[in-house]
Length: 202
Image (tube, rainbow, N blue to C red; front, side, top):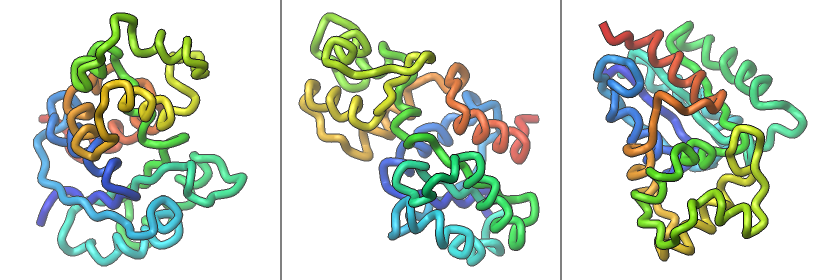
């Protein structure tokens, strides 16, 4: 039996998470065995039938994660934490305390916005000015914690300047390079705490 099955909404999310799960020391967990499944219905499908899909995996994995973006999930006025709570209840009927949902607000691209230096290094940023400074000059809005309010669009703009396709491989490269200890995104912190609870280092 493997340690973890992760159901994700798309390939970019899978590769971003793979980059992190291959770094157990940075997550402060023991090395784990894991597989991914992608929901064909993307975020909306993951919200509506993800728990049922994961129920089919309960004899092959000891734990399960269901991960989706809040944006595109079709949750309406329901906030990310409210949606997460609803999905956790659905998972509990099959997995008990061995499964957790993670709803990322607004989308997984927010996890790519760690260190400008690492992002510039991975993508071979061609300009002298830092990425965030260039984005601000280009009209991008940022939150008080220094993350773009539209993380996907900001990342797409950076990829264009770097003449790189917005590919899953690039998401894995970034996820393999950025700091996992300093990321303060609430959804990422919930993910990390869950993994540390399930797979403690010692």
